[in-house]
Amino acid sequence: MDSKLMRGMVIIVALALCACAPVAPWQRGTLAKASMAVEPTPMQTLLSEHTHGSREAAAASTSASGGGCGCY
Image (tube, rainbow, N blue to C red; front, side, top):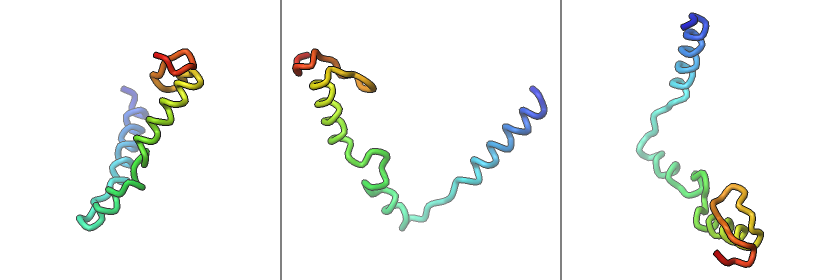
């Protein structure tokens, strides 16, 4: 491998490891809240995607299929 490439990879890994921080036990409750989730309302999102796929017959980023009438 090229020494510049290896040096760059080492720097990237070192910077990534510096971003890690220990979490105290009393802070874990805050991180476990629903508002900290990537998707705070997963069931509502699934329902909205299902409704959109059924009504629009558009499967943009979902696996929904249908003819627009809600039939499968």
